[in-house]
Length: 235
Picture 1 (cartoon, rainbow, N blue to C red):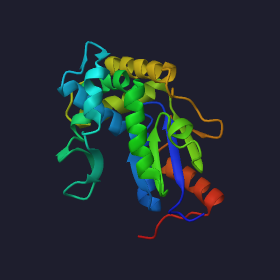
Picture 2: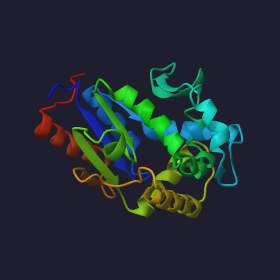
Picture 3: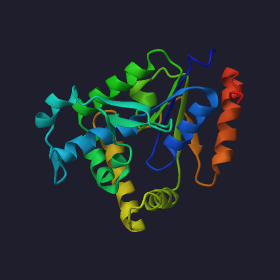
Picture 4: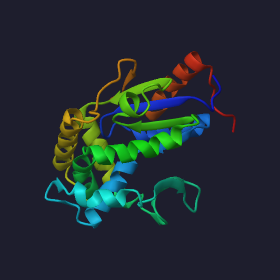
């Protein structure tokens, strides 16, 4: 299978390192990386800034007419990194805050929002050669992906990773608050009516609770070579 045609779908729980893992695979194998979580966070940021989500309630009837004009997309920033933009505004840092994290499941559960984001993802993936991470990529967005992974990790490990990420970005946080937020997101994501978080029957499980990033790359490298004959790009 040509490496330009493969679609890799990575689903799993929050703070399992899906995005970092997917980005590294994309770079190593010449694939286009798509961060579905960033798209949902971008819609959430828009909803928050325009007061369409307040006190845990989304005003989807008020927000829906604006979705088609948001122009949420991925592009390279000034130093060549692929980041998330809304129109001409780089919103990568804005969408990674605890405030957005606290509201994203409320927004992402709505069927209109999910249809909007899924449409964006499918448009990117039409030609193949992509890797995407999220919560319903292998079950809903690309059920025919050639490779599906499901990532999980111990909740305490995930909480510590998320807290470290927030602190590295300069945001003060409490580990117990972070853990509670993760648990709430897990429940909402797993119990929503539309495209709940679930492991696809043909997905390969990766529990990275006690794995280094290098060990994870060696693991996926073995799978890609065995199943598709893919080797990392020569640099």
